[in-house]
Image (cartoon, rainbow over all chains, first blue to last red; front, side, top):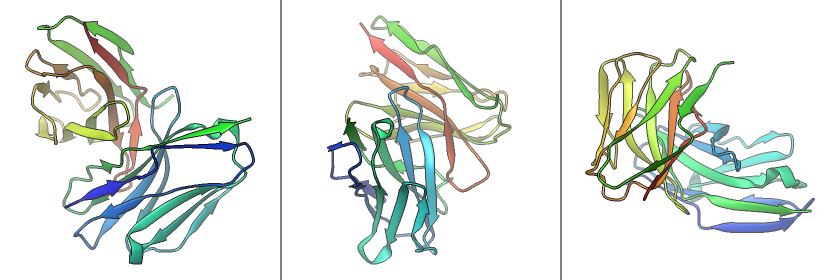
Length: 115
Length: 112
């Protein structure tokens, strides 16, 4: 079965703290893609990153970094030196070959960054 | 500006009424999707269309209908058969990369 689990429902941190959002996935396919999306209060989801199953290299983009580990089926997202503008709901998602690239989403993690 | 436009942003409906949510894109994308979001839950796929005049049911299609007569447009009708229609509805189109979706700002439907 294809599944994405985000066990952290809500996280609250003080500005400038680092925070890691966890994502665990299940898939029987060998070719798949993992994503992180951000949903600010305005409602639309904003694409942050895509990784394919053959590329376990970690990625850093400014204050954001992603740790992809196939051995633990995890794709965690770290925000360094969090800011109030990072407050949002973050979704991890999965798609795979032969799925018409439908995305399966986790239930989301609400991040609140307090000043 | 290129993007996905959903309307209306807020919609109230009486029980027993059908409503249609609009989704228009000017990104020239072939594939479009409708998702439903409930509080504290992830997004669930209602319908998707990979090409004009073709669409497939997602995981929760019962009580919904769609059409895809134009590449730019993918309207969703919430019918009276949908038992619990109050939700936030998101439309998306897929860019060239696998699974990379571009979302609209959503339509919030409330059934009174």
